[in-house]
Length: 312
Image (cartoon, rainbow, N blue to C red; front, top):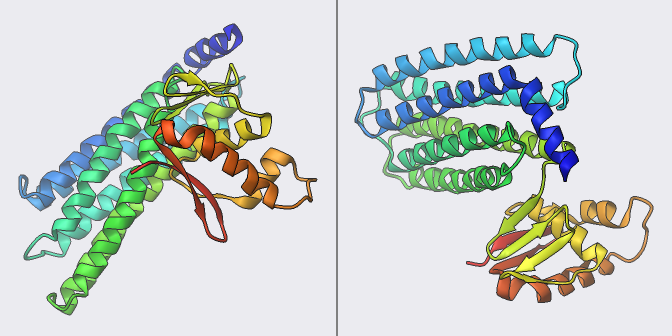
């Protein structure tokens, strides 16, 4: 535990400038998302919102260049430079996506705003706040996962909203040119949350590699990585080594399907060629131990794998 704390202090000290630049970029993303929502809600003229977002996008480009230049300097770093470069690139992509959406809304000169597009923009702003919090916590290498989980859920929500938008557009009440314009805008908005999820994946990878992953939570279920312990409703639940690893993997990707092949390879090893029903048996045992009191459910996705969700 002391070694992990020492690694965090080293990371914060060595990468102080880089962390500061990353946090500055997330603030620009949140400001841009707020402007986009204000424009769609009619609280700010759309051309003005786009112009201000464009300035923020230029600022983001400058920050990204500074980050890339800083990472070119040869030195020992507690975080792989390639991971920080990927993180910087995806953050820049988020800001580019918000600017692209604002440009389309402003240039298309739409007569009325599609309500579902406003909902998508609201989620983009909510995810921007989670993103800023996640990158802020990265400096301390702790408590990042709750925010990355929120980014995954936000991406799922916007996927649903995009389907709703397409259904609305093709219900026969829109002119063909409006269908084309709004479909383009909504798909651009949805692409922003895809980039948020890319950022979440990179952040989680950094945390795992740096040993900063301590507690994973969902509902009343808590997995303590360091102590190799699982609590359900504040009660310790004994798990076998295989059950613990399965739950660990599902919790790391909560809300997302983890393929059967990955579960088998990471828990039983790549050389395991036994019956895949072994996986189903262990999942059955896990369900009995964590679902009811934990407020969670392990969902079988036919032909693909399993997903861990909050019980609805």
